[in-house]
Length: 279
Length: 279
Image (cartoon, rainbow over all chains, first blue to last red; front, side):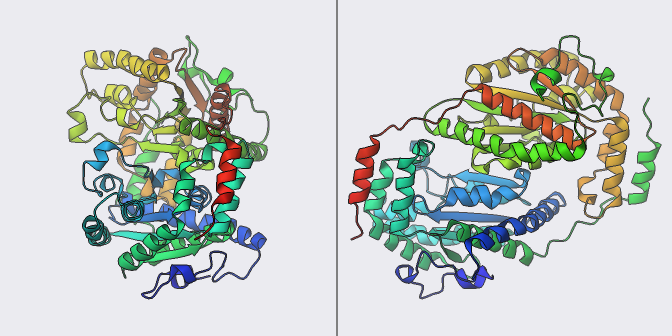
């Protein structure tokens, strides 16, 4: 599959016309999809190790995966099953929850900046600065002028990151209304899932059309050449995981990461190592 | 195996008498050890999910895994192969490198405190506040009085964490002098491993007996009932990984983590969910 091309949000992108149960670019069964995910884990892990090694070597590049989606869309599953395949040493994961009072007292990007990935690291934003133009818009948590300003501020922020060497992979996990109902019911049916359920999730579900519109606007306004949005149909969890894994692999392959050359005389070091004996 | 009992550093513990190629509590082969590691990954992942769920539910408990050891002892492998089996959402990983000038201007615990795990999280310290009594002692980076003070400060700091609900699992990966030579040579023999080699590592290797003594003192001084040290023979990577995995599993089992009960009326929520239809 080549999800980078297939899933990218194009200029006349229309979220309401996109079936959430589609599997663009993948014809196989659920079983073969899961096999493909497992099969590519080692490749993703090696690419991540190369990125990490480059960071140690002074390369300033990094990757930032931005995950957005309605409740139950599968963000946690992506983190566990896709990002979980790489060494945690090279991952900086941040969940952006309801902002604290201190965070609200600052510009909306204030709490985000400290978590952009350092060189060599894959940063993962589980929700992100986009919340401030999604729930921010739907619930009118800021004035229309402020919301408007934020699209431009996001663009500038992301441009700055890209110019600094960070590859941004933005993913909206597109889950359907009916599928969300099934997933929420599942959480209410299983005692080991109650903790994932929050009654407030239903308040958000009531505003489904408003959220769809807010996503439509945000994606249209902030999908750029250098930081494009990918909209991933997410009714099939295995498909969404495979697609995001492939997006990460494509991004890393595109960075053409080799192994850093030695910054020392290999033979001289070997010599010295062999000369050291225990006292 | 029951590594908690077997590997704990007892009062008259003697590091120099402990063979680094031992495999206490495990009779099987390397192959069966690797199988056991894979086999217990799901258990560790479920225990971690219960801890995470408890955190969401307001339980203030957390786990802190402290990893110490000489270069090549296998800290990175523990992070990748043991911690890597759990959902990255629930892990806060911190590598403590050479302190910055700003960090040096503060008390040695200043840079550590912000990284203690929040409720529900497994914190991982890849090196830690112990560096300040290890390299700190060996290289005389602080006065003898200050080093002396630090043992007590560490004890107080850990006591405070434990009282706050954090379970501390301290692990020294005990690699042998000869095995370190093999591992360093390996890094010099493979172009995809050069980045892991740092000529300064040999300067530390030259001070092997001094480090052994510093570890001996640190472990003896800071192994307490509430935060005991475990010394894990680490010449066999698979054994060390299995042992640390089991230490984590024991710690989590001991916390008796159930799934949180629902904090809402399940039937009423199900009713409301079903009543919501798309507009």
